[in-house]
Length: 234
Image (cartoon, rainbow, N blue to C red):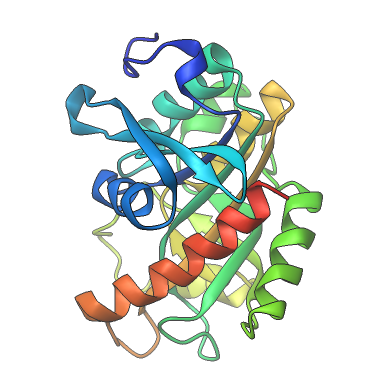
C-alpha cells in the first residue's frame, strides 16, 4: 500500500499500462484482460490487474500532467516493484504528415515543465525511452499493419497556452507531437532503473485543426492498447 494506491504489493503486476484516463483503465480491464480485479479506487484513479497472453498485467490511471503521473509512477516503481511501464495516451500532432488517429512512439521527450529543472538544479536532462521496448512495440505495430511515427515529443505543463503558436518552435526542431506526461515517466524510469515507453494516439492536429470524435478515439485507443499489451508482456 502507498499513499495514493490502496493495494497490497502482490495485487499489482510488475508489468503496467498507464492511461491518463482512469475510465480507459477500466475499459482495458473489462475488454482486453481476463480475470481482471480492481485494486484501487482512491480519488477514483482506478487500477486493475488481470491476465494477457498468460501473464499478469496491471493497468493504472495516472491523471493529466506531470505532477499527477509523477505521483503514481513513483509509487508504482518504488513501492510495488513495477519493472516495465507503458504510457498509452493521446497527443496533438505538430507535423503536417502526422494525421489524427496515427500512432506516435516517443523516443524522447522535451518539456517546458520545471520538474526536471528543480530535480537537477537547473541542469538540462534528456528523458528517453527504453530502446528494447521501443523496438519491440514498433515491430508489433508493423506486424498489425500499422506504421507508427517514431521520434521526439513535447511534454507540456500548459494545455491552454498563452501563446497559441508556441508549438511551432517545437515543430521547427523536429518534435512530432505534444502531450503532458512522457518526460516525467522517462525520467523516473531512469531513476529507478526501469523500462518505460510512451505509445500515443493522435487525437487532434495543431497544424490542421482537425479533431477526432469519441468513437474514433475509442477505436484508435483500442489499437494502441493492444500494441502496448503485446509489447509489455513480450
